[in-house]
Every structure is written in C-alpha cells, then in structure tokens.
Length: 416
Image (cartoon, helix red, strand yellow):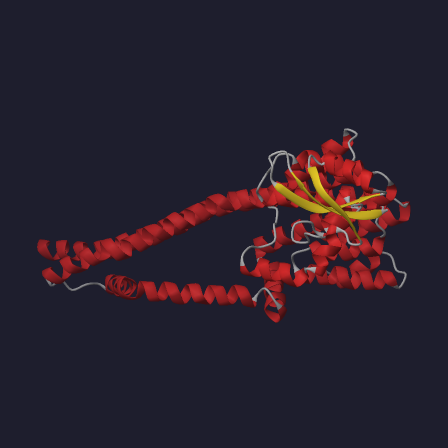
C-alpha cells in the first residue's frame, strides 16, 4: 500500500492534515472522508505519521521542552479510555472505527489528543500496540504487551477486557491503601496545626503574663517557653530547612544507593513493611497471571513484571529469578533462592508448574494476597487511628499542663 499526505478541512471548517495508507488516491479520499474530513489536497509520500514524527524528533522535542509536555493520561482517564475502547471493539467495531468514535467528541484534553493520534496511526496501517508506544508515559509495557498478544492471537477484544480488569484491580488495591491513610493524615495535620497555633499565639501571651507577675516558672514551663520563642522567631527558617532536607532526601531515595537503602528499610518497618510486601506479591501474581493468560511467554512476562514492581529489592529478585529461568529452571525454584518471596507463594507456584496450570494457580495466589492486603489495611487503620488521637492529645495536653503549672504554684503560695 502507498501512503498519501493530505490537507483538508474538518466539518467545522478547521484545517487538518496527516498521512493515510491506501492502494490508490481514490481509496485515500474515502479513508479521509470516513474520518469526517473534506480533502483539499492529496500527495503521495513514503512516510507515515509515525515516521514523520521520528524525522522531526528534534523539532518536536524542542517544542515540548520549551512550551508543553507530551500528553499523558491520568490513571482514571486511562481506565475510562480502556473500558470504552474495549466495549466498542467487543460490540463488533473495528479498532479504527472505535477510536474514530472516541475522537469525535472533540476533547481538547490530553485524552482527546492521544485518541486522535492513535486513530490517525491506525488509519495509516499501524498496529494498535505500535501506536501505543508513542506514549510510553501513559501506556506501560504491560499494557502494550497485552494488546500485542491479543493482536497476535486474533482476540483483541478479550485482551482489552483483560487490560481493563487488571488496571481496575490495581486501582482498587491502591484506593484501599490510600483510603486507609486519609483519616490518620487528617488527624496528624489538624493536630500539627493545633500545636503550631498554640506555640505561636497562645504560649507567648502566657509568657508575657508570667513575666509581669515575676513568678518563678517550673522547668517544664521554661522549656515550653523556649520552644515557643524559637518557633516564633525562627519558624520560617526552620520550615525552609526542613523542606529543603525533605526535597533532597526524596531525590536521594529515588536513585542508586539511596533507593536501595530506602526500599530495604521499608520492608523492615513492622506494619508498613507487611503491607508493601503483601501488595507486591498480589501485584506480581496478578500481572504475571494476566500476561500468561494472554499468551505472553514466561521470560518476557517476568521482564514486564519486574518493571511494574515499585520496590527495587523485590523487583531485583524477580530479575535474578528471570536469569535463572533462562538457564532452564522453573519459576518457583529461582524465586525460592532469593528468600524474599514467602514459602506459601513458592509452594503454590510449584503446584501450578506440576499441574501445568500456572496461570490458574497465579489467580488463586492473587486472590489470597488481595484478601490478606484487605485484612492488613483494616487492622492498620483500626490500630493507627486511636494511637494518633492519643498522641495528639498527649502533646496538646502536655502543653496545657506546662502552662497551668505556674498558676498552680502561685495558688499554693497564696494559701500559705
């Protein structure tokens, strides 16, 4: 097939241009009209839109860095787009027509721009999986490989449905953890603001009153006054220093030795470590099972799973296991050598390998660790909420006691 570069007008009269693939010029006209455009000029070219994008890489990169970023979908937008595309394709639409239907909404957001580009690529003869690679920040390697496996098997609707189910489960797991942290975060923020307010506005007034009375203050009250004075005069500097240290620390723990050390430390924290590892085990089994069910072979599947695990310690063990599998070993034995994955998961994997139903076994493992994650999150929330309330009450109560001690001392002296 030949490629034709066209310039045309949309139904609203706006100028549009692109590249389409067709056997001849008449076919190109029909393709352009099926997109809802009126062709003005058509010239044969040897490059598709994707190839032109690569040829103009420097110019586009300069534009994106200087003026705007490449469009990127949020997770919620990605879920909605995937679900709508899956439903349209499952109803019998071709992938090109389905994308054209979604692009007809004239959405100017990042979602709309990505959908239009994907539609143009499909019309030009590019496969959906190759088109998705134009936006690696939106479509992960897992997403792309599931779509590619569906294209290879000729069952793209099922592959898109599996993509939706997978990402919905991932989002559900994240939502459970986030929702469990909302209330403790609110308690800490409100408590912190209350303590800062007491230190800045209330304690100095008591300090002036005590100075006028010439009272001898107890040591706890003197310490409280000193802290309040420091916060009042140097609070902004202290906040700036703490913010700078936090930013530097966050950058340090994102790469190299800092990241490795921080992720190891996370796994050793009593409650937090259990939640992180359980979530990682559920994600590992869910992702690997989804890939195997869609026809992806074991080695590429393990490589994709390794990239999707957030903790570098666990992902590193998966990478080592993948290298051992290359040598002909099973999955369960290499994972067991790392001593990071629990014995129960290893034993269930071994059973799946013996029965020849590894994908089905991974489904059971996923269900088991999803249930375990729910239980841990609920337990953590149940324990953490009262502990934080008690902690805030102790701090505020301690400030109140320090302020009342001089008053009680003066009252006792008056009775004498």
